[in-house]
Amino acid sequence: MFELIRANKRRSMLLMFGMLLLLLAVGFAIGFALVPISEPVPVGDTVLLLPIGGAIGMLIAFFIWGVQALAAYSAGDRLLMAAAGAREIEKRDHPRLFNVVEEMTLAAQLPKMPRVYIIEDMSLNAFAAGRDPNHAAVAVTTGLLSKLNRDQLQGVIAHEISHIANRDVLFMTMASIMVGSIIMLTEMFLRMMWYSSLTGSRRYSSRRSSRSSDGGGKLILLVIAAILAIVAPLLAQMLYFACSRQREYLADAGGAVYTRYPEGLASALEVIAGNPGDKKSVSKATAPMYIVNPLEAGKRSLSAITSTHPPIDERVRILRSMGGGASFADYANAWNKVDGPGSAHVPASALAAAPTQAARAAAPSQAGQAAAPLQAAAPQATPRKEVPQKEEPTARQRQRDTGDMLRRMHHYRFINCDCGIRIKLPPEYAKPQVKCVRCGKVHNVPPQTDAPKRAKARSRRT
Amino acid sequence: MLAIEYEEIEIDYCDTCHGIWLDEGELDLLFGDHAMTHGFLTAGDPANVKGEAARPCPLCDALMNKAVTGGPDPVVYDYCPEEHGLWFDSGELLSILKHGSESGPESPVVHWLRQVFPQSPPTTQTPTPPQV
Image 1 (cartoon, chains in turn cyan, blue):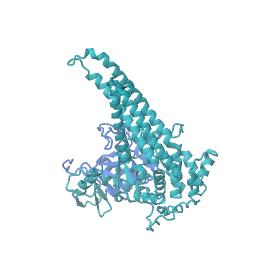
Image 2 (cartoon, chains in turn green, brown):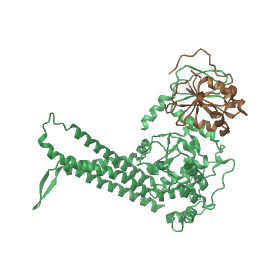
Image 3 (cartoon, one colour):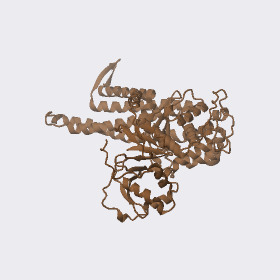
């Protein structure tokens, strides 16, 4: 996939450069508008007019760009996770999710396991962010955790892991943060305009004479703000076009290859598509990063051309047309079959490198299994440890696991009564004792020892 | 409110007023035959709804709507307009426990509630001081 990786790096550079130019232009315009003075600077025998205000504006713009770029590069994934309201979890919080991520990390031969985040939301979605495979993170919603079975979860995680392996995350993280900060700057300018027009009272400044000359500057500022306000959503839209469709197909292909079970991802996509409910806290800047576009949940059947993500039913159809194979070549064939010949764009190196492999059979009753993700493409990879597999948790257990994880994260205390009742006490519960509703046994409420420690750990992380 | 889990079903229970909250997600798990239970829950005559003050939903604080169950002793309960779940006051729960099975074969939800609350939740007990 080296072509893809190189293209992603190149595109990220281009994006940063374009962003720099845009900001410099804006900085110059604002600076010049505010301080329309030009200093004559003699260069040799010609005299150049140096616009002081413009130069300062450009300097400030360069500084802003530097901060942005640094932030996006060094902490992009953290920023995005924070923006999505995601919380990092540890293995003990949700072992099943961690196992799946570990398996897929091995299958994709990533050097390091991405950090795992949880988004408290009952909608079904997931995304990945980061700079490179060494600094990456995946986030899934709690709804996803409780609704998908292991095979489906594996498919979704494999899809996200292939975004990381293909370096899609670099471009997408950069782009989201850049678009996000443009939107922020726009807001700032608009507010600046608003307040400067309000506070420009003549009562104590007697600036009546200068107002007329000031007006021109303000007008320009206003025009720039207006232009930015138009450009920001357009940029977001361009981002939609740039990142999306092909990468999503390739990530689907990766998902099929790493799990060796295309049906897992296919059925997961179906479940996700069939589940109503938009995610609440999604901005336009981060929408393209999710496995299905959270902003298009309502109109998912309309497969508009402007869509970031290929229509789900098409993705499912391709995955199901792989005819028992589970290699990039099989995916490319299926893609051609579904969308007509010549539509598949799978990098040649992927077709050449990955040997053909057969999909594993649908996991029988003991499906927790999730048969070892195939390592034909990675013969030297660490062999999977043979751990005795637990049985696939039922829908109830999945929902319980996820709910309990959330309750633990919110410092609930758990009491198991001998009669089979499990009592979960919120941190606000102040009584010293609690009576079991079933058998009437009175339990002492354990003190809250866990809460301060974990709260500290969280604040350290953020 | 504290959460009570039994046989992998969870409800929220107030140990001060003995009301219970059935979360929307839990309802799906609890109702084996969703259609039948839904039928029982909505069989009542909405004309019976009167006098009770509207309660806010524990999740979203929106004022909940009232609905009436079927059976010989209809119960007025609250449901969240955003479909977050159902709220039963203590006495309402008792009544459902008593009459739930008379409206047909015992539904899983009634069976489960009987398991969890073998002695019906007390309604005349001296009220415990309100807790924060």
